[in-house]
Image 1 (cartoon, rainbow, N blue to C red):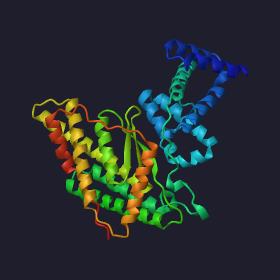
Image 2 (cartoon, rainbow, N blue to C red; image 1 turned 30 degrees about the vertical axis):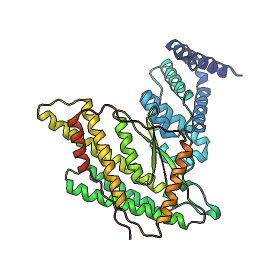
Image 3 (cartoon, helix red, strand yellow; image 1 turned 60 degrees about the vertical axis):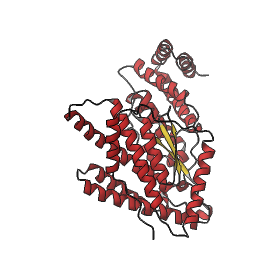
Image 4 (cartoon, rainbow, N blue to C red; image 1 turned 90 degrees about the vertical axis):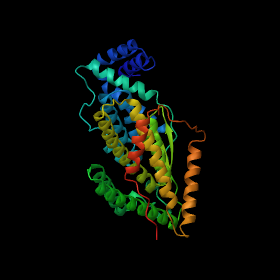
Length: 385
């Protein structure tokens, strides 16, 4: 073992396997005293990141957790390690290009503080977190990235530019709906986005049915961050079910895993984000009205507001799904896909529990949240020809 590797090992023994501040200070002092350890230290960080991938984590999951548990300095360091490790692991680096692009911009020395001791402390704090990451349910390759026999690719974003253009149009419509101050305009924009989502989902199902090899469901993770994470998880579950997907919430790690086919996963992420924006705007207006009436509103008002919003939007989405009509020849395709989603979810999560919303005891908040949900831009999918 080289002297630099020995120094890193001693620092790790002091800081990573001991939760005390004293151990952290000892490890940081060892690293700060020897600049020659920096390359070895960075390489060990990449190894921690590679181990996280083996345990089911993905770049966005790691960055989300680091941001929640530590701070932006640690996030920048984690982003740099992820990019470096992805450069060595070309298959994963290619598949996760979109996630990597969304990370904090890489800098020459993203985590260095005013001195070597501060920098070493940040490094060891991040490595402590990475070392303790639990194993997650693995997200298998999504259909769009898996080649089929004979060189075919699954229908999805990578199968051509048509799907990408469709998703770009949907995102643009929802962004305009969220930004406009005119309810009629928002209604028209969101209705058009819903129409495009429905068309995109059906097109993907028909393409998959005609392919030489069967398509399979994929999965993604969606952050469900505090505050009011229970209500947000309920809203995501409702959106997922309305779009032929299933969502399983991991409360300790602040995300839900959504299982479904690629086009439907896209719809869930887009609609969930849009509804959260609409809910936040509506809650701000409701609180302003409450304050204008001389009534002070608290966390319980907001919790009850979002719980009612999620509950009522779920009812509206379920009703819209029930009203959707499809042709007889498409029913077997949709039934097969629904069974595949259910099977994949049960294999990934054989043991799940249900829980009730807590802290929902503000009548005014519930009333205002239900009213806002009734006004939210949610429309039934158009009838299919």
